[in-house]
Structures are given as structure tokens and as C-alpha cells.
Amino acid sequence: MASTACGMATPPSGQAGAVVTIAPGAEGDAPTGPAPADTPTSTPTPEIPTDAVVPTKAAGTFATATGRGRVIGAGKKRVRYRVSVEKGIVWGDIPSWTPNEFAESIEQVLAAPNGWASSAEHPVTNAPVNLTKASWSFQRVDTSKVDVDVRLATPRTVDRLCGASGVDTEGVYSCRYGKTIMINLRRWLQGAPGYPVSIEDYHAGVINHEFGHFLGFAHMKCGGPGKPGPVMMTQTIDLDGCVPNISPFTRSGQFISGPWAPS
Image (cartoon, rainbow, N blue to C red):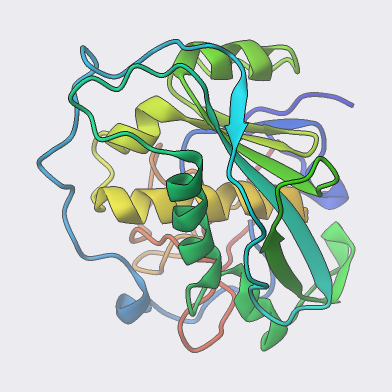
């Protein structure tokens, strides 16, 4: 299948091939106004590691989080996901991320009140991506039989594995190819320069964005000035009048959307 770079996805057939993520597509009716209570308001933490200390390469193999997680949500489609972290990362003075800690962070994002699991109460319908009253639940497993494999890896490893699918992640970006989500360690540790959210909110945005690609969504544009940006919008490139948003739904259950981004 053809590779697709961020900002160049073609919406009518859903998300195909590989996707490079520069930021945290959704669908449904665009929101009627801003939802301040659902948008991040914190500022980035001052304890952000510099490029000089961020590990850029490691073993290229992965350690998997052990055990089986709880079922998150009550959606009709169960998504079984596995979580792993690249082996051999030299953390130095940076607090390390173990596979189980990374898994816990992802679980918190998926279980958030306005996360993808909210689709059980607010099913998503959109003909262009072949969704009719779609809803999802999630469970982490540690077997090889999974729907999606989420990996935290150093920039060089992300470049190599995403590059094999035709996607240039430039030592910075994350990507999704096939059933694999590659989260770039550089951005995971630093967030995106100029994107005004905390590092925890950045984590939520990129996980929701990448899972959104796996669920079938291409990129979206801002739905209108002052409105929350769709989670599938490449918000760190240009908010285009929207306010930062890291979640697919508002707390009231409205699916946050905007026009499809042009291919």
C-alpha cells in the first residue's frame, strides 16, 4: 500500500499505508463553538531535556510490557494492543520510561473521559471512512496476536522502521504503518516546540492522534476560528485559528471535527 505523509492523507478511503505524525480527522458534524473546558490550559514543564541529552539511538529491538491490561470502554470493536520500549536506551540523567510505565501512560489516555473509549456512549458515523455507529474498546495484551503494536523508540530507530515503509520522520516525528505505531522518543520527552500544552497533554495528543489513524481517520483541518482543533489535525504545524485540543471528544460527548485536509 502507498505511504502517506502527515498533511497529505486522502480522506475518502480512510487511512491507508503509512502515516508520519507531526502533531496530535475525525469526522461528524463540526463543533458549533469552542469548548474551553475540554482544551488544555497548562504550560509546558520547564524540565524538558535538550537535544544534546536526548538518546538518539539504541538496540533496535524491543521489550514488551508484561501482563494483560483491563478492558477500557464498552465499545463494540475490541482493539487489542501491545506496548513496548526500545532496548538499550541510555537514559543518563533523564528519568527512564520502562515498558510498563509507557503502557500505563497509554492506558490513562485511552481511559480518559473524552478519549476514544467515549465512542461507546457516542458512536461515530461517517460514510467516507465507512463508519456506521462505530465504537471501540481497548485492552493491552503481551502476546504477538494484536491489532496494533505501540512502540517508543529513539529517533534513529523510528527513522529506520518508518523509512522502510516510505515515510521520512526526519529524526523528530512519529509514524504509523500497518498495525505498528512508532512514537519518537525525542518528541515524547520534549513535546513540540511552540505547541502550548504540557508534556503530559502532548503525550495524550500524540497517542490519540496515532490511534485515530489506526481506527481509520485521515487528517482534518480546523473547524473554525476559536474552536478546538480536531485531534487528527496537525496542530503543531499550524493551529489555523483553532485552540489546542488533545482529545477526540468534548466532555459532553461531541466528536470534534473539521474539514478533511487536502491530499
